[in-house]
Amino acid sequence: MVSLIASLALAQPAGVFPFACERFRPGGTKDVVLVKDSRDKGQVLGQGSQVSQIPLNGGCAFTVDGSARVVAFDAEGTKLLDHSQLGFLSAGRPVVDPSGSFLVAEFVSGEGSELWRIPLKGKGPATMLSSINKGDGSANPSFEMDGRTLLCKVGSSWVRLDVSTGQTRVLDIRALVQDLPEATEVLEVRPSPLMPDLAAVTVVIPRASAFRWTMVWDRKTGRVSRLSPEGADCDQVDWSRDGRWILFRAKDLESGRVTLQAARPTGGDPQVIAVVKEPGS
Image (cartoon, rainbow, N blue to C red; front, side):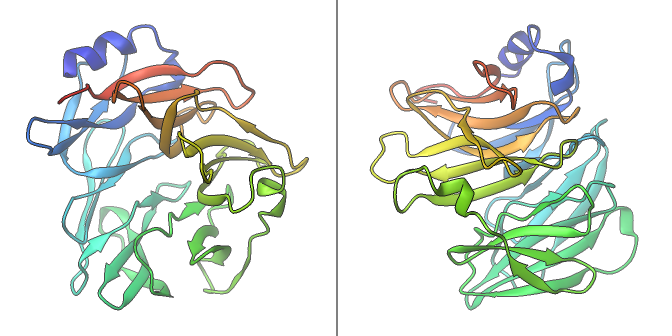
């Protein structure tokens, strides 16, 4: 599988490197693999899932399955963080701030969840940012370019959270869903690290066969465009190392093949940059 990742990467634009992705192993466990360039066969960082790229700085963060543990690595594969949150059962998809100074993750207990800010490289204590009543790991936090504003999902709503003060206000997503089918749900919102008006999003389209779509949202004009291919169920939307490509995981519903794909926010056909899971594996 690692050699297949490398062979696919040969034709890809340099701006997507380095990137991290899951790789399914026999028996259902998953490794997280860091691919540094087109000649790299991939470095296994550990077992886990819910991978989050670190745009501009490079590297990745992910959760260790079955635990309230998050880890982060830099662009060279050096570990920046290995943090377990005591008293919690699991962790949601983490995110690293634009400066590369700290990580935010949602930790889930039997009574709800909490968002925690965790410094990288041991630069101070972890602090709680917010508690979420009935939180289940689906907050999907992400940062605006300023690094001070966190976007996250609370119940059926999206909010903007000031990481310095803890104050929140509602994120208006009406323009995002107004032309989509009724009852469309927004799962992920990841603002661009370079273009303040753009955000990559994952939405759930009700009654659609490929129900999760990857889209780009121009927050200035309100325009929303689909990037994910037909017949693919997509999630884990993100931005590339150079901030110019939108990355997402896509499962082909006919074959069962799962890949990591990259698309320009301006449109065009997405490109497969790695294979996550082959059919039957």
